[in-house]
Length: 343
Image (cartoon, rainbow, N blue to C red):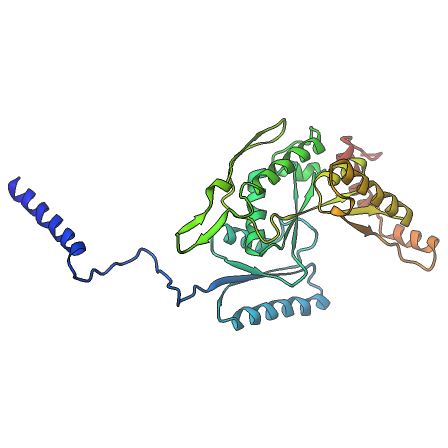
């Protein structure tokens, strides 16, 4: 026991001497440290997509990949984190965009520092409030917004397709817009858990953040509940842009409270003018300025030499299968099952 205590004492003295003597002690850091002279290179990625495999779009697809690759490799402060590319991925859903989902995953895992985009175009991704998780959605979009330096947008839809809902284990037997209000409210509260100046990154004081500006939310409603803090500071634009589309009274009222951009589903100029005014009125009713919401007319043209020809041409695209699909879609929205005669 005496010999063991003596050994420990010698070890303690050796350690103490290493700090008090003038000998140089080599410190091996757990991770590589970067001095003021040495700058850490950013891991940079880019995303490319075209909606079809058509030859006319293949050239655009390859040009996107080539342009982004050259731009990343030509910057001495960047290293390539990857070119994520989806070809033949049409529509607004991200379920078929495997590379886009992989990019989001890599962002969450801290493998990407920056996503480059064009100067005026960002990411607008559709997610439904009826079958998504508010914390997961808030974290995904805030991450994408941060690494892309404020280029992310959430196309917030309620989701009316019963088949898609069932894939997530959800039955649409509730007030879809009631849940949409609670869901979006929760997401915005989570996005605002970091104050505008909370992120400090002060190397001299070794202060990462001013945690007095970081808060925790605890929300519980009829449809949604969440508690916690997002570990992501604000982007350059503060929080992701919210897009909403539709044309119903419920849709316009929802957009008036939450949307930054509204895409109107309309067929005539008069209908578009009336919808835009209704949207501006909804913004004012929610304490916002009329111009806070950008209105985009979702034009769906029917081409023809005259109105009769255009309608007849449109009719050629509606076969029996298409008609049944549209009937089923309307049924999902109304909560009514339409069964064609003879079935």
